[in-house]
Length: 387
Image 1 (cartoon, rainbow, N blue to C red):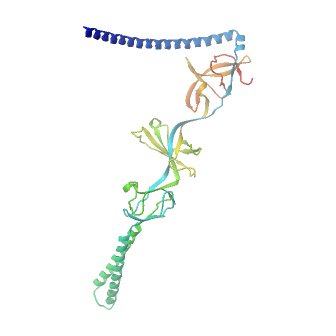
Image 2 (tube, rainbow, N blue to C red):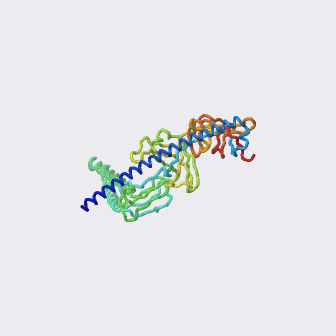
Image 3 (cartoon, rainbow, N blue to C red):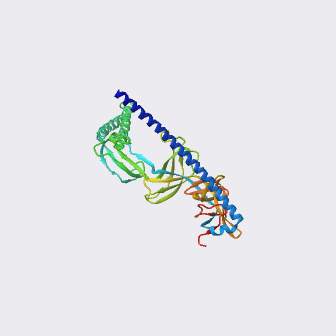
């Protein structure tokens, strides 16, 4: 019996808790609805107050004399307005090369470069083991000397009408073949000398004397020599795919190097036509001028110009307000020898760096209200800072 009572009490507790939770949820929804209703009423009351204040000023101009509000004014002028896409990029070298041997590689006998060295095109960087080829060359040169002597003897006999023409021709062919073999062996020996194929800096030198060098970034154990030409640099940026139509080859960009406090104008020189499936971005690059302060792998803050208007009307973003008719800006108007605030409905365009482009509603010469615009109503008297 006692167990039954306990079960009933537990069931009743959970039932009450559930009802309480439902009641709490309903109460929260009711309060949110009440808040939205009050906000709506507040907005309507503010509009009514503004309208009544304007009507009072019109009926009794003296009523506004004591309510002039201190503001600052700014006369609008047509100017160039530019919108940028702000992204992060990286400085890279145009020419990066991994040194590779021409004969497939071999054991390093001499190394003539270290990391950080400036090298010139054609400079000897390392020498591979050529002992086998040198022995082969020595044997071939001995064989050539013997073949040349044999040919000379055969030629002398031929001049005395001794022997056959075939014997002389065979002796001559033997000399020619050995000469060609020697030329080939010397060329192979030359392949053991590894030269720089371009001017640059030895950015990586991970090979050592005695190790097997095959070259390239995928050599055994990562042993390689990487050359970077720092005289030709570029900036590379990954751009989100939603800007695919906005960014074009030839477009202007600004490259800021924050670590050296330098900004460089450039133009987009390469734009990939494929969007990366993993990052959802496409690739662009721009050539950079030769500058001793620029280095590969520097971080760059890149501004990509995607819109410009040569004669735009621009206002500070915070001066644009909203009412039931849309967006408006407060301007200063001289009425009856008094300065009053007037609403000017506007159509807006792009915005960048706290500046908003005005497509219509304002023009050059209009005087907008800057500081002090908050709380102003249409027709309210204003006074200018400093008067």
